[in-house]
Each structure stands twice: as C-alpha cells, then as structure tokens.
Length: 485
Image (cartoon, rainbow, N blue to C red; front, side, top):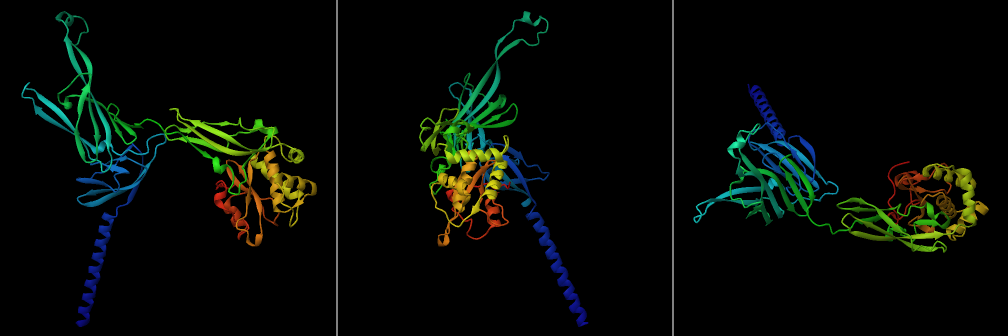
C-alpha cells in the first residue's frame, strides 16, 4: 500500500511538472513571437496588418522608427528599431524595422505627420455675433522641433449667379459661377510635446470650419527636411528644407593619401605619355544632396619639361554652386634608356587590347623567367635599379620591385612600393601594389619555389606565406581589394 501511495505521489508530481512546463512553453510562444523584418527608407511608411482587436504598437526607438496607433511605421533616421504588437496585453507580433537612408535626401526627419495632431476650437465673437474657428497644432514627437508647417485647403466660392435666360440655353447644368480658393494654415517653431495656434492666410481670409474644405497637401519643415504629404495621391515626399551651403567632399588619393606612409608618391607620370593619363582616376567627389559630382583636374602647374614632384589641383562643384578644392602630389619622369628597354619588352609580351590584369600577369611571368635572385644589391633609386636589372638580369627583392614598377608603369598600370614592417634583424622586403580592375592587389615577383604572388588580396598573401614575411603597416597604403582575381 505504501509503495502504491509513493508511486501515485510520483505520478502526480510528474504530471504537475509537465503541466507547468507546457504552461511555460505556451506563455513563451505568446511572449516571444516570431520576429519579422521590414525595410523602410527615411520618410517612407510601411503598414503592419493584423486581425486582432484592441491592438497597440510600440517602437523601441521612436527617433528611428515611429509607430502610430494604426500600425503605420514611418522611417525617421538611419538605424534599427524593434516594434512590438500587443493585443490584450500579450505580444502577438514582433518586427525588426531597418531604416535605410535614401540617397540625395535628408538624413533624418525629427517629426513625422503621425506625430502631429490638430484640434479645432470654436470661439464666439460678441461684436459681430459670428462663430470663429481656430486650429491648434500639437507636436507629439519624443524629440524634434517643427520649424514650420503649412496646411493647404481648397474650396469653391460662389462669386455670381447666372441670369435666368442662361438656364434656358442648351447643356446648361448650373446657374452659379465659382472660383477656386486656397486657404493656408501656418504654424512655426513648435518644440516637442507642445502646441501652438495656426495663422490663417491664403487667397482670402477664411474663418469657417476646416471640415468643410478639401485638404490639398501639408508641408512640414523639420530639421533639414521638408516633408510633404500630397492628399490627392495619398503620398509622402522628402525634400531638403534648408539652403545648401555645404560643398561636395573630395575623397580618394588626395592630400596626404596621394603618397604612402613611407613618403613614396603614388602617381607616376611620364612626359611622353601625358596625353594618355586620366588625372582624376583615383579621385571622386560626393555631395550630400546631389550625389556624385564631377571632378576636374588642373595640371597647369606641372612643368613636363622638368622631372620632379608637383601638385595637381582638383575642384568639384554642386548644383547650388558650392565648390570644393583639393590636391595630390605626382611624380614626373622623362623616358630614358630603362624606359626604352621596358617598351621593347612590353611589345614582345603583351598585345593591343589586353586588359590590365592580363598585362600584369604577362609582366609577372616575364620577370620570373628572365631574372635570377641574388642575396644583396645596392638599393639605389628605383629607375636606376630597374636599368641595372635589365643589364645583369639579377637582383634582390628591391630590384625585383623596381623592374616590376617600371614595366607596370610603362604598361599604364598604376602601382607603388610596399615595404615589410617590422624588419626583424634588419631583414627587409619590398614588393608592389598594382591597381587592377578597380582595386589594389599585391604583386611580388621575387622568386619563391612553388608559390605565385601575382595579384593577391591581403588574406591570400598571408595564407600563402605566414609569419613576418608579408607584414606591413596597413594604414600606410590605400585600402586593398577583397575580391579575388
């Protein structure tokens, strides 16, 4: 009997635990509803649909995405917010709202139309005996000031009645003549959680109720944004609401970025090829409002008859006339014996119409097949080191870098020197970065048995040869390409 009672107690406890776990699981299913993802641009809206009663919506960050009582989500600024949907106190849905910036548009809307409410108030004028309608605008935004908001309403005003004889004419359908009138309501400088009375204006002074008029549109200036609601099409538009006083931004290999951290000028130009160069190749300009802006290069300060380092000046102007200016260092060389030899080599190993990648691979194969490595040579100026390599067909890593730079330059392929860092025991190493297919790739012709170092990404380089051999100061050089060739 005692054993039976113990068994019944154990069974009861087991069943109780199961029911508790099932209850927890059921509750978890309600509380942790499956999260859905929605994308919305700044100023655009997305509607959350559901079939539940007494639904409430809540955004985790109303400065990023605002959720109104009807489940309309408006993107306010770039970022991510979560929106929970509750019915009778329980979470029935969860959304991750990714708000994305729309190019050439303001970066944020501090206040949306869903955060604005209007109240109409009737006042009795004891002098005239008329009822005057006034309107109060309230800014319910958590953060954000309305600089200015304008409502546009329209109605048809009767200006005259047609004579009775006109009613007898054929196709006459009405006996009144009307004119379209526009009434505007304007409010200014409304901070968060505050209200202000509107000022009425327009074609005529109108003191009646707005409910009798047709809403045309609403314009709201908030932050740098002009947010427009077109009632006819039920659409929202985002425009800049402030004057454009910011110039474009010029980026790329300009100013200090036009030479490496080692002081090596990146752009190398030959006087006999000056008409073939695109001097804006590594420079671009972007304007916050106009997007990509054309860059112009001024090369008038270059004296092509004299070798040396010069500055190129770049300018970019947006549609509002705001102008940006920047510069880049360049190096001018005159062709000599080493260039003549290099041109002869290139005629034999590459053909007209080849891509830069195919040219670079042909140059790599040529150097690897026509030079022998020696442990040390003098590290003279790289053009002289390249000429020496043609004469003796031997050299160390610096010589391999130098002849690679010369052949790539004469083939029209931009490249630069890159150096090992740190250098344990003074063991230095030099190789090239070559610009191919819109990116910078490692190009090392120094021979190593069974390994090819032609046009590699950082990860390819380090995976192929670990240790300190290919370590370098990452910030000293332009960002390298990620895409493998």
